[in-house]
Length: 242
Image (cartoon, rainbow, N blue to C red; front, side, top):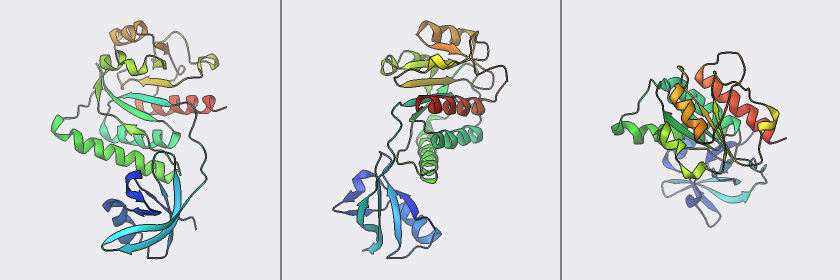
């Protein structure tokens, strides 16, 4: 049986010992019913993995005798997925699967045809939930990195964001004249923008083109928004790592 695996932030590792967070400790003790002396694995979400032995110490659950594991290197080319907000259950399913596919960051977007809005009073709780979803997905697929989920922003704010000016930027658009092609895969970070069920408003597509985005389609099939996100990430991740 493979060892059980837990997320541990770097700041909770010190002196060859890791102190589990309360939620991870609860899962270990009360759900999995692991015991002192059992071997487990840890990952810090930033590229490092460890193995060690469970210890119960003054009310805390620790993992001692830490040994750093050799892990596969993270993909060389970062991929950011900017996805329009859709119904929350489908959006959260997309978050989970995008993390499994190896996206590096997820940027929720408010667009012209978005049908979901996160109230400011609920934003912190929603972001905490979304980060937990991608962390659990990363744990299950044995990744040692965890994508960061950003707060929702307006689409025009993303277009003007200087952080992505040097990235290869793509807008996936069903009305695009050209399809995604093999010569579109650059040796630099990639930003993928996927719209909601209603697609992109013509003014949004025009603004993206003026901002330097390449406007492409995934083909003739009409895909649901969450399916288009995963298809785009899977294609880019596969071809960028060849």
